[in-house]
Length: 272
Image (cartoon, rainbow, N blue to C red; front, side, top):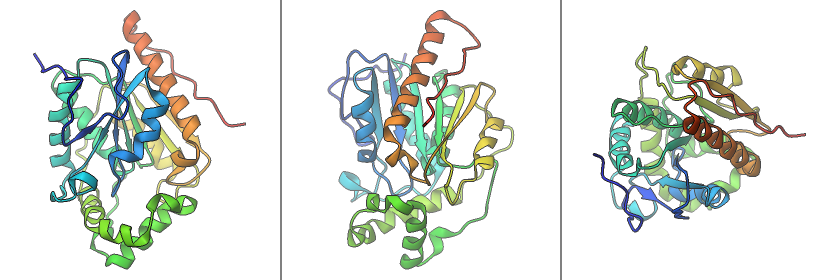
């Protein structure tokens, strides 16, 4: 039997900004390259108390800045999966943005192998794993790496913070880029959990067509939702994103309660 989570627990990997004993499910949030657990504080606040958010803190940033970053998606997925098994006393959903989407996919595979079937995999701001591209951003010099990050941030440049602080964070950013750029998807590896893809319609690195190819990676249901905006659409569209996450989780919970094998798809609210 898996160890049940301790409400007073705080460990290196998991941040619970708004603990909720009444939550029917937990949403595990996995940040983008260079991102930290605190990026998802607004998501946690918006979904609490109905859904408890567990935000993952990678090594090499914020309060883990003295640790060496992990430069492998496989190693990260193994480490996070071990942590999440302690939190599986309630249904889990996973939300990964950019690099976090690939990491979430690999974690879901590992959880399912251990008998834990997540409610949903939310893959945000990332093309499907099968859309492999040879990119070497992690080998660029500091100015080149900053230029790439700036392109992705677009009008949400403020999320990067002070440029001097960003330069201090470059080692962890570079390690994250190396992890995702050296990741190789293994053909035939599907998940059983449904996949919901969220993407900005002006993302400079994620064409909607390549985001749609996530459908090939699940034996379950698939949904795609687009938003106005670029790679960090979820900053400007935060209210709409959290509404859609909440709705999708509620539908899956209801389906589990009624034991239907084929749930009706959630209908994301569109912008007018």
